[in-house]
Length: 339
Ligand code: 13P
Image 1: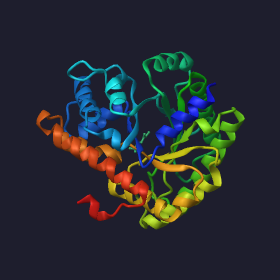
Image 2: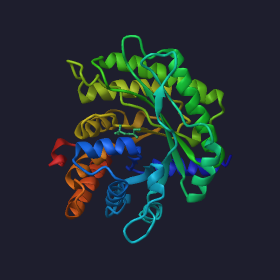
Image 3: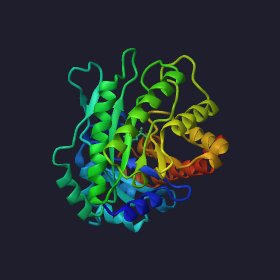
Image 4: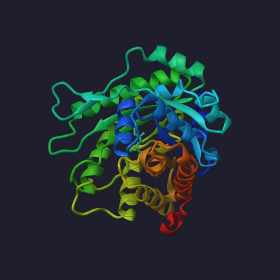
């Protein structure tokens, strides 16, 4: 394992006020979002959409790394330049989603376990040659009356740790993403309790599997109220709960934490990240940034709507959302910069 190289990649991903762009929607998820936005669900439209993103002028000022889906790693812009080359030229480190999705976990009704470990060492060799420097694996944890169970949390933690070990062997920085879903009417206190349990188990198993903590990044959910909860915690409550939970669970050796947005409104995700920085900026042992998909892409995707003539404005919207999150990372976000 090249520890120095892993540390360098992780540091570059957390650089300055930048964050990561998750653009690694699987074919099914991308098609679902396209359907909602009235965009044809074909490989060519997925290519055009990803071309719009990776050719956004100056995106590298705001984004340190982009997480790709396998299909995108093989695609190129209209002029034939591979997307991976365009990203690197723009100063954005290319990464890859490695998991093959969360599937129903046998004997654990209502819970899922993420698949994709078989053949992973060989897939990683190919991705390393293609120039991909980091990777992502997402585990999905659902809050309900009787879930999550420790049986499911441990199964997911074990898969995350096995994946992370294979990444580090291959020289890619693993992003470890245990996502506690926002779905449901649970309180922020319940989200805290579940997220704390999940992160404790995830780090217990990462350490057991000898993951080099200095060469990984954690991608957690923020601690928030359930989407359907009648009382919604405000930004300061989210910041307090999230930071307290992370301080209890995430070793200081981990260089960075990069949040998923998880279905929060784009403005909320920015306001929450901002509140954490305003109050805790100098008290955190790790860098704290964003690795959003929906909360950066959504306005751009909706405006683009699959139309060539909308590309330039869609790119401005994408750049704007990314730069607003840079401001949040500096603790300088205000609702006024949305205008
Ligand atoms: P969202 O920001 O849309 O939750 O996506 C982040 C991600 O990468 C999910 O795996």
